[in-house]
Length: 79
Image (cartoon, rainbow, N blue to C red; front, side, top):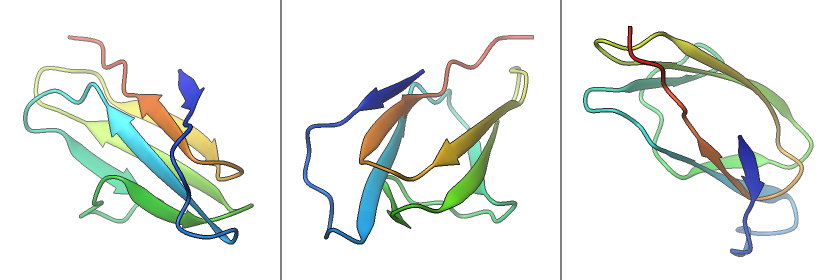
């Protein structure tokens, strides 16, 4: 689920994307790269792929178009 965020973006060229509901030990990758800091600062209008993995949960893949600042709920499903 992707929810609009009323918070300000860093500038008109950037949006802030946060991820909530992460289980303990979750690994978040943006476009295959590890070490994601939350909230993420992404260039407006870009397309990305988030992959979230956590022990005891099924992987979650999220396609993301950075058009506005938003909060995404991870919605991880236990195995």
